[in-house]
Image 1 (cartoon, rainbow, N blue to C red):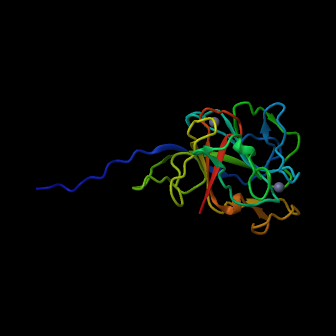
Image 2 (spheres, rainbow, N blue to C red; image 1 turned 135 degrees about the vertical axis):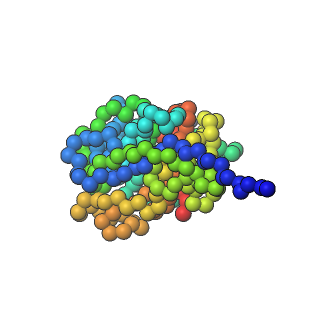
Image 3 (cartoon, rainbow, N blue to C red; image 1 turned 45 degrees about the horizontal axis):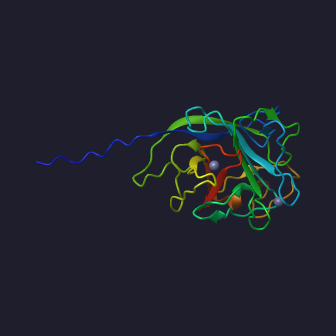
Length: 235
Ligand SMILES: [Zn+2]
Ligand SMILES: [Zn+2]
């Protein structure tokens, strides 16, 4: 007699669901949509090549058990005027030197900036003017990959990416293989204040990241630069 096969108990990966709060923020808060970006000393609010200050979409402190980034601060900026997808600049099988400043359609440098850094201690004096300042919370959960190894398809830190198309991995210019850190769900609509200028390719009263693609943030485990992060776009 042959017993029915019992599927392996799949091991969940520690992850944190990113959840939006509803009560507007009135003071700088480290985990936020919009709000006051926490930056390192001497670091300026990122500007796009078009001259506009980029919008702060969200920021959060990475929980200590999301290695190798635990204790870092993640901040995601993206130009309001320029909304496109990210196209990886590759040379010799890895991302080009200083890829976070490399030419990117339609400009001479990227229209986004993603920072992962330990020293983000100071909130900017001004609040992000367009994206509504709301609290973010991180709810721990076990991200159990499915039979294909894909994690849950939500906004989250850690766990396993849910790759809408196929696994897409990159080597940093410094030689380290980038490590998946955070996933942004497809068509995440960020509420903006009444009167905020419109964003191309967005829905009324909201902004989106990278045309609303699902985004997987891959970051350099060696922290060779605060901006050594690649935003993979898929849909
Ligand atoms: Zn721009
Ligand atoms: Zn690196």
